[in-house]
Image 1 (cartoon, rainbow, N blue to C red):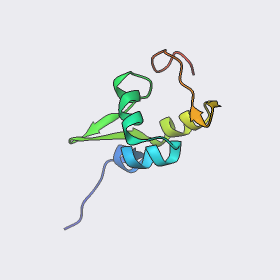
Image 2 (image 1 turned 45 degrees about the vertical axis):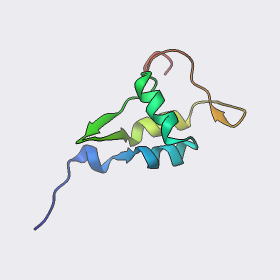
Image 3 (image 1 turned 90 degrees about the horizontal axis):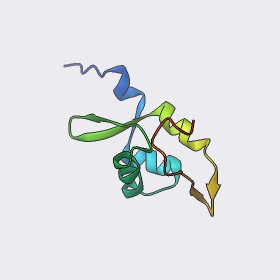
Image 4 (image 1 turned 60 degrees about the vertical axis):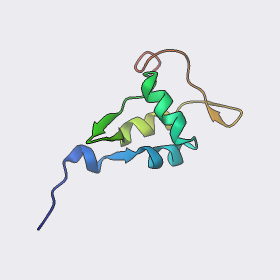
Length: 78
């Protein structure tokens, strides 16, 4: 039996993959989602983050080797 995945699933990272790409912990990713600093969506019970969102985050400046996010919600600092 063949399984078909939606385009969104194929173009999205798991929390673990996003955390590794952004060099932060999965807890940090969860906090950013909760605080509205990044966009994510649920696939079943698991969070997913679109590849474009991770790419956008990788362009953000770093302070002391950590990603710097202002206290503004997603979209206000693009």
